[in-house]
Length: 296
Image (cartoon, rainbow, N blue to C red; front, top):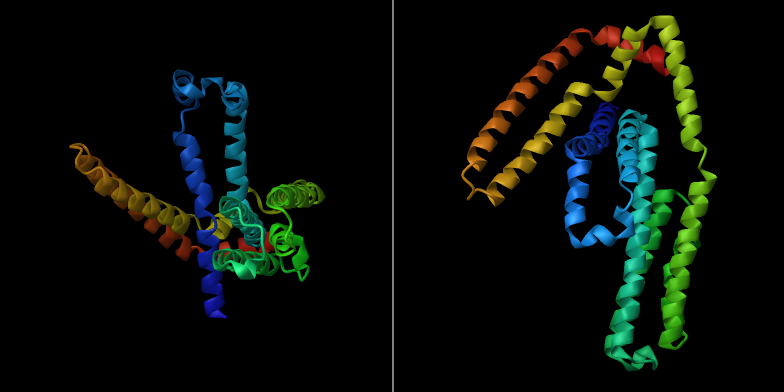
C-alpha cells in the first residue's frame, strides 16, 4: 500500500509538470513580436496568420486551459492523458497506412503479394504495426471493440484483395475521414463533461469556503497539488534544458554567465521551496484534516 501511495504521489507531480511548462512558454511568448516577424517573412500571406486578435484570444485561452489542467483531480488528469495517448496512436496508425500506400505506389506492383518478396515484407510490417496500434488503443480505452480503431487497416485489406492501387488511395482517404468522424463523435458526446466538472468543482469550493474559509481552501489545494515538490521538479527540468542549451551553444561568450545565473536562481528557489515543504510537514495534521474535509 505504501508503494502504491508513493507511485500515486509521483504520478500526481509528473502529470502536472507539463501544465506549468506550458504556462511558462505562454508567459515568455511575445505575440506582438511574433506577428511582426511573420509579416516580414513569406508566411504573411498565409490565412492562418491574418487574424492577430484571434491569436491573442487563443493565447489567453491557452492560459485558462493550462490552469484547468494544473488543478484537475488526478483521476481526471490521468484519463485526459490516456485520451491524448489514444489520439497519438491513431495518428501513428494513419502514418503507417499512408507510408504503406506510398511505397506500394512507388513499386507499382499490383499482382499477388506472395509472388513479390518486397511487397510481402511491406505488407507484413504494416500489418504488424497496425495490429499493435489497434491493440494498444483498445487497452488504453479499456474496450474490447477493437474494430473502432482498425479503420486504417482497410488499405491493407484492399491490397490483400488485389484492389487497384488508385482505388487503395481512395480507401486510405476514406479510412482517415472515418477515423476523424469517430474522434468528432467522441468529442461531441463528451462536450458537456468539462462544464459539469467545473460546475461540481465550483459547488464544492463554495461549500468549503462557506464552512471553513479561504485559508482552508488554500491549504487543501496546497496539499493536493504538492506545490513545493511540483515547482522543484519544474525548475529542475528547466535547469536540465538550460544545461543542454549551454552545451549546444557554449561557443557564445555569454552562455557561461547565463548558466551561472540560472544555477544560482534554481538553488535559491529550490532552497525556498524546501523550507516551504518543511513548513508543510510541520502543519501536516492540519493539512490532512482540511484535505479530508475538502474531499468529502
